[in-house]
Length: 195
Image 1 (cartoon, helix red, strand yellow):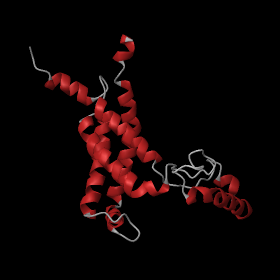
Image 2 (cartoon, one colour):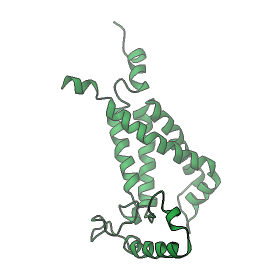
Image 3 (cartoon, one colour):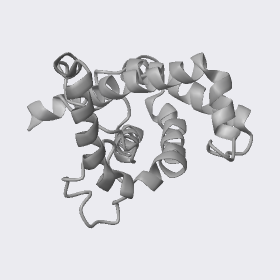
Image 4 (cartoon, helix red, strand yellow):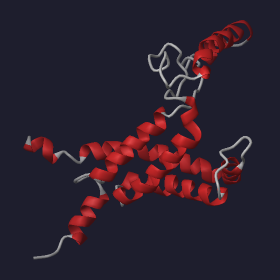
């Protein structure tokens, strides 16, 4: 067990390596389309209708872009997890919640059948996907279009955001990881009192 304990920095490292590119990409996308994000955050008809959309868009962009870079380095991991947790909570409740759990619509999933996570989009997806595939088989280059994978219908449920939230909560408690983060090395160089 001592051997396993020496590797306890590995799970936080894996979480950081998995999550950092996702956050960096999300932040970069917001930065690259900042005016559109501000409009989407603020619009009450087709957007999120959030208050102070310019401030909210800036905070979300900074949290994801800068936070993702810091996560990758394992620098200020616990601290940067907090704004990212808030960002994920806002995303879950303002964007994804009405769509249930599933990120990809799959009406055959046990998560879609008869649960509170069910929505009509999921139930309608099988029929729409069948119709789309038939149209493409008749009029498109179906084999070429599906050579990289089958078509799916995005449901945009809370599945991914909830997964990221769980990872971030874990990182809040574990930190960046022993031996695998700049937090660890800086603390051991700077933070420990000399004897």
